[in-house]
Length: 355
Ligand SMILES: *Cc1c(COP(=O)(O)O)cnc(C)c1O
Image (cartoon, rainbow, N blue to C red; front, top):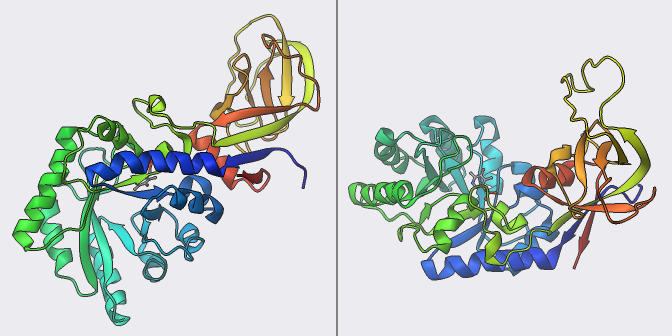
């Protein structure tokens, strides 16, 4: 396999970022589940996060949880499960997020057959409109699930800023805390987990504004890339270059910035639009949409402009760069969440883990 493109992952930077998240969460009584789905749950990377002190691992896919079995920490299945995968859910997860009574019932039956109880975290939709019981239904659903054979109602949780873009706040997470208290009172049980969301809840943690009842967060992006989707936590001493994509230049030429000839559609059926910037120096790197979308690349050289790409080529404007790049040079890019996810998934991108 050729050396490039490759994604270089710094294990020590991952560990540092994990440590940063854990050290701000701990004083607030919050345990951290590190979310491994952004990097296909490579065990070497999960291990770095565990060295950073995270208390659990979490992933959306059973296939990924399978890779993490040798770690002794509890594992959470993040995606509400398919009924068809419940046997694997029992086998490979300790906790599962649930938003359907029917799914819980079948899971419970299967667990009971094995003489076991499986831990369930009930998801509450606080308005983001992805998964979760709607507000009026939460307490009743908790009652039903709590009474099921083979099920231990371990907690409740929510997910925000994923589909609807709803920002976590003292108010909506306070609402989750309120539901936790009501369930505990009405059912006479103790919920061991109140899971207050993903990386987008980190600003509340940094500002000390997260409701005290919240005792768990499921953190991916903040830890992996030192970013979170809404306000940015870059100020809080995180590494953003934990994952770096390296790609080799295969062509450098001066060309017009607008194509010549009648414009139809591009390789993906879209009608392309061009800004006329005159004749510009351009580079082609040998990485393309089979690996990642061009707009997920963040050039280390800030003078590089990403123009676009096709399946196997990404086009760059290097006209304003101070460095005199040559064919064969390797360019480095930080990655957005999507870029990390795609480059870690693409079989064409080599993975290199550095200490
Ligand atoms: C992906 C995911 C997370 C982690 O999200 P980040 O923004 O990467 O922190 C948490 N919870 C659920 C249910 C998820 O699917």
